[in-house]
Amino acid sequence: MFASSRQSSDESAELVRGVGLGSATALNMIEMIGIGPFITVPLMVSASGGPQAMLGWILGAGFAMCDGLIWAELGAAMPGSGGSYRYLNEIYGPKTLGRLISFLYIWQLSFSAPMSIASGCIGLSQYAAYFWPGLDHTYTARNFSLALPVLGKLEIRWLLSTATLVAIASALFAVVLLYRRITTIGWLSKLMWAVVMGTLLWIIFAGLTHFNAGRAFSFPPGAFSPSKPFFRGMGSSMLYAAYLYWGYYNVCFIGGEVKDPAKTIPRALLLSILLVAGLYIVMNLSILGVIPWQELDRAARSNAGLYTMSIFMRRIYGAWAAYLVTGLLIVAAFASVFSLMLGYSRVPYAAARDGNYFKIFARLHSDYRFPHVSLIALGLVAGLFCFFSLADVIAALVVIRILLQFLVQAIGAIVLRIRRPDLPRPFRMWLYPLPALAASAGFIFVLFSRTNSMKQIRYAALILISGLIIYFVRAWRTSEWPFRQVTAVPARNARLS
Image 1 (cartoon, one colour):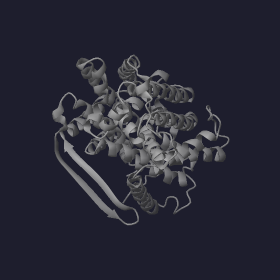
Image 2 (spheres, helix red, strand yellow; image 1 turned 90 degrees about the vertical axis):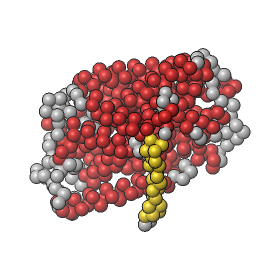
Image 3 (cartoon, one colour; image 1 turned 90 degrees about the horizontal axis):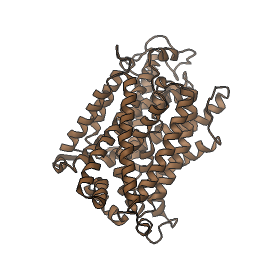
Image 4 (cartoon, one colour; image 1 turned 60 degrees about the vertical axis):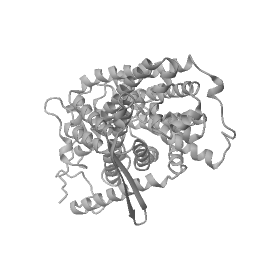
């Protein structure tokens, strides 16, 4: 059963606007930083073939800023909960094409959001293996392939290890911590932000005080030659960069719980991008100045690559520092999981209130006033994705989200300017429409410039096709668009029967 539509004003009456600029920026930053940059450094170096991987971080920051300006304009203009669901619905028409596109967004989010959360859980469990090597023990691993018409072969690999169980446990623990009032979560997010930032700053300080410029800038011959391997390497490294920078928009998903959203949302977005970009670039440069890129390249091809920061600190200060930073990084990984789960749990809630998702997701906790059913469901599905490898989860979620969310939203920002020039926009995109065009170009480059890029594109295509089938079957049964010209939002419940 799908929920009946309600007015957005009801939402603001039920949700508590308790998140200020500090908490919003902290939530964005802990989602952006998390465990990702501490695992993917060797992966980016290996993909690029040398320290020119820094170019991937810099370009990634530029595209994140371009996309952040899109989110800032849309978030300030439509400051309710739901993020992209709300924006896409309004951009393309809530009674026509927007209903289909927003449904497809929620459908892909049913896969990509748990993948994003699972990536943090998997990273946490793999760093925990530095303390307990037995976590790496694999009980079973299986490959699954399916030949599909037109799309080709779909390949999936899953495994079960002790680390898998730790990853699942961390997802469930995040659900437990989030099962409370939003005002309490604001203080908890600031505490986690302090841990994450303290760890990152310590790593930067250690690297800069032991920095060797000759080692950091020892580029291999032809490092910047505009060849096919160079562009493929940049495409792969920018895919990781996209994954690592994403999170600056987390505040948009809880827009209905943000104080003074017209000002807070754009400021939190842009502040988090600028701060994290600067920290990422300096951190990676400092690491390259301590650990030779050839060693990072070798580490990327083995499980030792997952412990890069532990090895980095052990080389500078000794074993005690390696163990301490590993513990802090586990906390940072959990902070990221915490922030992701908070933001994404609000999206199915917003869709259900609009009658475009199952009614049960529209329920709020009777005492704490948060969407508890959506939160629990998200945690359980994330636990299922913990059975896959970290590299597969990251690549799949980035490609799925680019194709089925970010591209249509970047183009949609321009469409909305044309369709609704009268819409109040407390924040307007700088240098419009250049940021939207640049972000779209960057997304397309990441999609198609990588080696074996079609593997994840097939996943996205399968999700798109299945979502279209589900939507059109439902629309036909309930006489919704495009099978009937809808002139008003129906007051009755829509059903799948």
